[in-house]
Length: 199
Length: 251
Picture 1 (cartoon, chains in turn cyan, purple):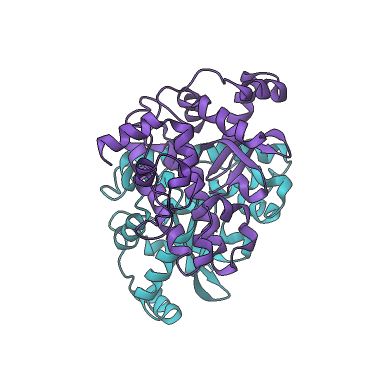
Picture 2 (cartoon, helix red, strand yellow; picture 1 turned 90 degrees about the horizontal axis):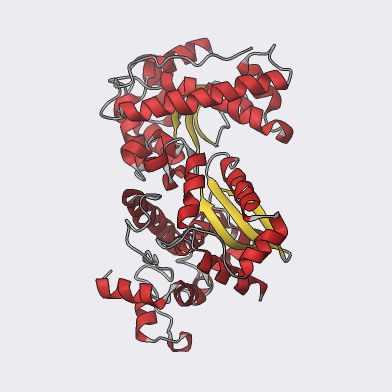
């Protein structure tokens, strides 16, 4: 099925000063848009356009002959998930069942933060850091380039894009500061709660 | 770096400087100034390990308008400096590795102790790749290849234009972060690309020239348009230095 580029769930300037309007314009209108368009072309050529994008990602993961389709499918999906992982006035320690689950599975919110920050800062090159549900437990994972946790049968709950285009205009080489800001001011815990409820 | 030192390095010329800096690990630019032959140089470890961040061979704004000064500052002072620091740190408990050149470490990457191999791959690669990158660019660059490399490119690719197209495609199709390369492989020129900071040396190939297609190399100026960056980059390519690398590799 053709995949539609979703609008951002907030204004381009809604995440300032943490993520600039310019970054979101390029990130959404150029990068995400291109992944979506390329995916829609390639999925037709591959004769797989009767499938949902999630089905396509899972079906061709690891198949080197389908690398370009996989990259564009996963990046189209990842970015939509990323926009929803951010919100104006987000971040900080979540309360309620999400907060309880984090404490139960990581020991404390600080332990989670440490693990997530390490994953995001040590993903060498381009990639993503994720909070996932894996067999009922919360885990932090990192993935290179376009890869996402769907290919390992995990349920993604929250993600941070650590491709340089996600932060270079605002933070330049200081990826650690971008990660810290995500956790303190942007992470959308409501989205995590929705994803946990659906899992 | 003092003005005198920069002027001296500039005067010294890319060839001699590149040989001096790459020949001996930890051989500092100061040592090069003090003793102007390689034999006089002594092993001078950097403050925090054998590898030192080489100074840019030109001013930060020298490659404008094709590469902006701000990009050069971050790229050299932060990214390259980070790879240098992390490489030194990775081998800090391995005295035998500290005596090798960074190029040797990469050529023998599979024999590096497993607990530091990934770190050396990433940061040793970053260190060596960027060291070459600054050298193969010049404010007086651009134009067409000269010397033996010019004929070799024509022989192998048909024309300089055909080579440029293949090289740009290698850069555009490197998904994520990495490098586009012209390498000498089994005596033949090949265009390839590598992931992240992987160096052709790790596969036994010699990097004649390479262009950095990590987004940090072009995002401040070219944003998402990697293709335009690859096209404009030819304006700063230092063919004299690339020819020197080629002639050294085939010698």
